[in-house]
Length: 263
Image 1 (tube, helix red, strand yellow):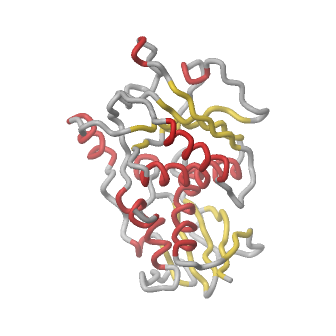
Image 2: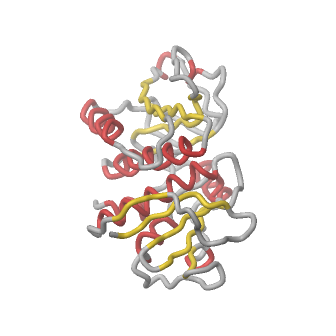
């Protein structure tokens, strides 16, 4: 499947079949990690670890995950750039996993003292802030279906409530030059499906903002902007990210984060 199909079809998987990743899948995923990039800077370390659950070693996942043996772990710096980069880089891995037929589930929480910290030392300034199981999905359990419903996983705000034309008074048309990339951003996963991202388009430039809703809001924006960027690349559109000196004035509770200018 191509990247747009992966974005549209991907769902969070919480119930796995108990089998470890094949060596080929592990190699491909680690290669994606190595070559994943971000224009936002910051400090992020991505690791992949296998747990031997058959010997009764069960990593702590707040009872959210069943049957997973392989987990990604993200050490992230305590600043906005690191959170943005973590979302942007790791979503590239998540989408590749889906293309390989593998499920994943972002879990952002506090893991101090958990089994995930055993034997792990992170670079200075980084802390383990995200884990993500990866593997073959088992048949979806009743609990997983209930969880998806409770989190509103299939619900998304309408395009016109998230994206604007020139100012924050006029909704953007989905037929805009950036319409497809922003639609793929709309479909991105976020903490409790909060969709914190907002954007205003002015000619050849998109200015991104976020509405603070949780500690993961900036991380979520990195995920959404990854979808935007991957769609731009898929359409052979070139552009660059930058910090605008005078971005459009937004709603008082929304915070400017970055801009993208089409070449």
